[in-house]
Length: 338
Image 1 (spheres, rainbow, N blue to C red):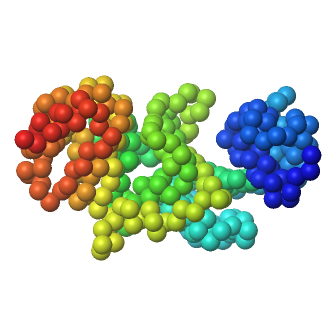
Image 2 (tube, one colour):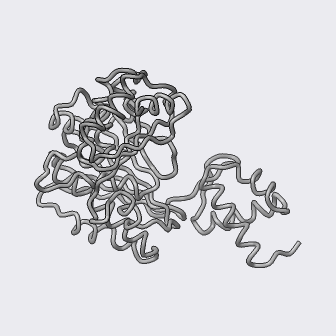
Image 3 (cartoon, helix red, strand yellow):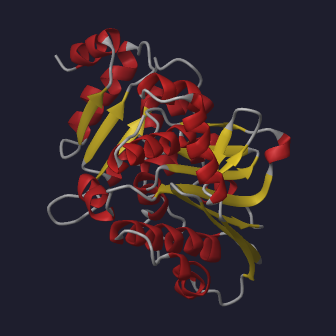
């Protein structure tokens, strides 16, 4: 059977996308297109010959990182824009303009954090690239981001530090930093990880749930490791992400607080007023707060009353908008607002 060039390219694009998403490439392609297994194998071999795909196991394939480079830097008078020009800029040429802009922003923001806040004397940077995505890893040998936030802000533990970091505007140097870098970087990339000693924070546009958890000892990072993935086909721009979280005067004034993340340091239940107060710590830095109840089965009367009546009465200029609440949670919220 003879296919048009356009149709062959469509099939090949689907093969790449299936491999990228770790799907069963033969099963999914043969279910979607009227072609033989031999034809699928032929297309995959073409990708292997072009260094786009590599074999992972007998019938499993993955996209090959045809760029994979690491450089070590001494953290002495290091400047993020100079490092970018020295190391990363050579990979810009074939990228879409919005992807180049996102890469410059995310790389320089995260490297600046390591340079100015880590307290470490060594920084390791990895840049990798396959057919679909860019991967950047920046690792230092410093104090550790979650330990530093806990200490600088007198928090209970590192899990609370992670929870507060997620809100945005958290910085230990308010004169020189806005505290927006990690918040916005995590929004503009597709996947975003921070590992520090035995803790991990993860967020990303591909996933509906945010999650952080203790990681295994083999993954322990002595210092801080920031790892992010950026899809080369994305149409996302930094401007549209900034616009989503800023007001008409371009001030970063809104955030999302994901309630289930607080389970790591507050426990499973959200019943008491004291827990509500801890959820809203630093909320006064914002004018609009989306309180995300996804994954929360129920909340207590005191918890709801503290947030949606008491806090609102004390801070009328702050708008708290509940989202993703189930019927039971929604009932308690509305009851507190009567």
